[in-house]
Structure formats: structure tokens, C-alpha cells
Length: 331
Image 1 (cartoon, one colour):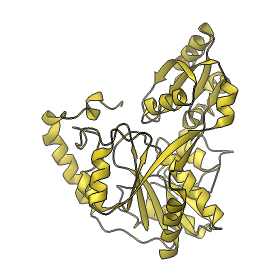
Image 2 (cartoon, one colour):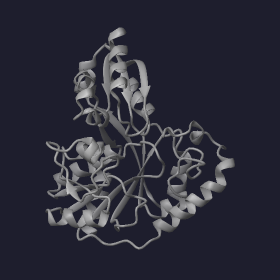
Image 3 (cartoon, one colour):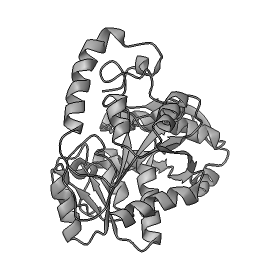
């Protein structure tokens, strides 16, 4: 389901507040449940709200930092959108997004990735397989595992929207309980919409960072002066479109779909036809290209679409690296 536009507008959602109060109470109770300790340190990257903020690129950067420190990071994820419950180790040679979801396939290109709906079982699986540290790309609101470090990632333009809990707003749980469970907050991109959440985090003494998503320069150079049809089925397609525009790419058409969208053959043919009719280059996200794989009906679109990788870069990279490494030492 696509998120309602009013979620991101101040002062909205009042009529749905009674339902949000119930949802928030359940989420709060769940987040307060007792957590189990894994046998290795756990670093969790999470979102306060629905919608994309740059959590997966941040998780990839954390794994790079751990590799550089000679650690053996394993990713642990639920595998949203996949049919397999796990725990299992993702093998891109045999698994498709329909099996394990799109994010695990992307993560598995960098480090061993465990899909498990039961996070405690997944952590045990990772430990037995040789992990020295676990990086969770999701599961912030899931209390199953105790975390040594939790970093919440917020889109700077959208912030926390109207500040209300689902279904009245985009928050996954009441803001207070979420901030109580996090040690650091990262605002990604221009921060005009994040003043409130930055202030709340700083009042609580949380570590705060500013960061950006840097597009792959080689792909941007390959696009050159060509006009593109950009399409994306992620939590915040507009963030992807803005990344292209800010990199100097002329985005002639924008086509957004729901998060983790499963493309149909008709949609694939429509995108191809629109691109051909206007002589546009097809550009999408890495996650979307992962979802196009393994389906013969989508093979032509996958062949003609180029993915734009992005890299998470904290403005204070040394301080961010030290926070990550301290979490491993303390574990």
C-alpha cells in the first residue's frame, strides 16, 4: 500500500488519532518486551517511520567499516517480501527476490546474509556460521534481540512527517519509546524537514550525524546528457528521483510504485514502450533491479534498465567509524 500524502503534512491525521493510539500502545508494549542477547555484538540500523531514508546504504557502509577493522560481519534481516522464513544463508546464485526479498540479495553481495523471521534463531545461525558481529538492516522495533548499538536513519527532507503513529501518520511506534531505544540518529540529505527530530534527539543526549547518499559517479558519467525515465518501487521514490536530479541527470519521466513493488509483465512492457517512444534511458534503484531478476516476463526490462548505486557517507566519517567500532569492543 502506498503511504498517504497527508502523513507528511503538519497538523494532519487528527481523525485517525484514536486508531493510532491503539496501534501505538501495542507497539510500545512490544518494544518493551525482554530481549535476548546474541553471542556476538549486534548493530541495528532502523527507521522511525515507514518509507525509505537510506537505511540499507547505511548498513552497507557499517559492514565496510567492520571489514576494514578485520571483523566478520553478517547481515541479519527478516527478508521482507520473500516467501522463505529461514533461518537460511542467502545465495544469490539460487535465491530470487521472491524467495528472500530484494534487500538481502543486495546485502549478500558484500557480506554473508541471514534471512530469519525469528531474529534470535537467525543470530544463532550467524554466530555458528562464523560471524564476529551482526548488522541488522531492519528489526529496530522488534525486541527479540538485544542491540549493542542502534542507529536510526531519517530522511532530512521529510523528517517524521506529522509526528503521528500509523495510521494517523508515518511513525512505526510513538516517538518517545523509539528514541529511548536508540543511541544515535542520522539525518540523510538536506535537513529542512528534520529540525524537530534533531532537537528531540539532542535534548536526550543522543549522538547525531548528518549524512548524504552519493550516487555512483561511473553510472552518472555513463548517463551523460541522455534524458532518463526513472522508476522506483521503494519506500520513498522521490528521494531516488531527487538524487538523480541533484547529480545533474535530466529526469524526463518519473514513475513511482509502492515499496517492494512486484512488477507485472504489463508494467514492464509499459515502461519499455514509454522509454522507446521518447528515446529515454531507463534508470532504477539497485533494489528494483534485484526484483526484476528471476522472472522471464521481466527479463527485457531488466536487460534495458540501469541501476544507480548510492553510497552512504557521514559528514563526520571518523566519528561515525569510531562509534561503530566502540560498539563492537563493548560487546
